Image (cartoon, rainbow, N blue to C red; front, side, top):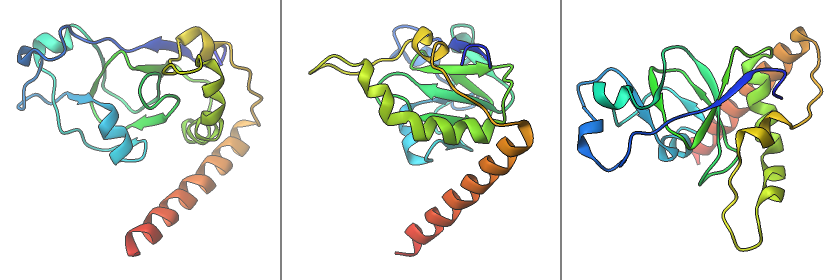
Length: 165
């Protein structure tokens, strides 16, 4: 995967509990794993916002990006659509050479396989080298677009049905 994108880790101000890192009036959100689980990996809004001081201690994304959680909810792919500070519990796929929605779906399918990197009785953590060295075969760009679009539509349909019940 390292040949398909520049994979970098987010960064976090420390200590993370210090209120000086956060500011409700900021236009830069702070991505937390709770946002990922609540929005099922497609981030359209963030509850918490990072201060100017906090932005200097993290990686701020101003465009949509594919991310991967590497701690807590390990291996969960994320498509972020908002201006965001990304903490060190995520990898960022910079300058990708793939269709974002296709790779999101592939990573979601591959997610259970990351568990093999954990030790018995310990929390699984992924590092960027494990992700960079993961082998993947990609179809051509047009097939990636079609496959990604199909599964995104299917995800939306499933979500709508779940809300009805």
